[in-house]
Image (tube, rainbow, N blue to C red):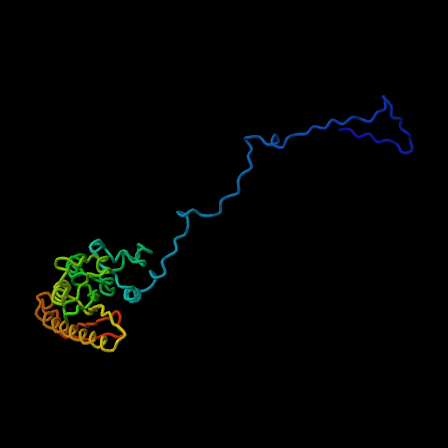
Length: 273
């Protein structure tokens, strides 16, 4: 490219001969400046993929086994009672808790017995006790159960039935063997099903009204029913083959409770073998 410098103070005649040089401008499209073979490299992806992400250890796994078991046992004990039905009594419930599902490795190092010994299981039918106990050695491991007994009938103790809406939803139809649903069925069934029981809670409906006389009558029915249940457990626990097998029942204490829906308060008894 040549540069012409004009002297100062010399006029320049602009004619056809001395015309200003014509500049030819060429506009290049920007996309023609880059060849297809010379692409601008993309920014490197600094976000690691899931397979490359560093594994964060589950916090509880760093604890000593004794402390880990104690924490998990307290967690199991605070869980709400698990309702056992015809559709779920064979499931591995120890592997289905939120804690177990959060860490497969944690599940692999915790014994199933830790769950069954500290969780509480709710039954609405005596016929569900034995099938549930037969799986995962629960016959030896279960310590706490709740029994949905239903309403106490007007005829007196032992006439309660679980043929309520709640009982029907949980697998109890109120027909056949469930129709009686008396203390004999329940006591015999749970003593036969579980050898390691430490606590049994009955949940009953009283339908308490506001009238004093009516409330007093319901309380008398409740007291009479509870006395029958308590006596049946005392007799059955000492005589049942499962409870007395190899002397395992000797010196043990079974805590019996009753919770009353519609009535503030509960009964508690401790029965010694």
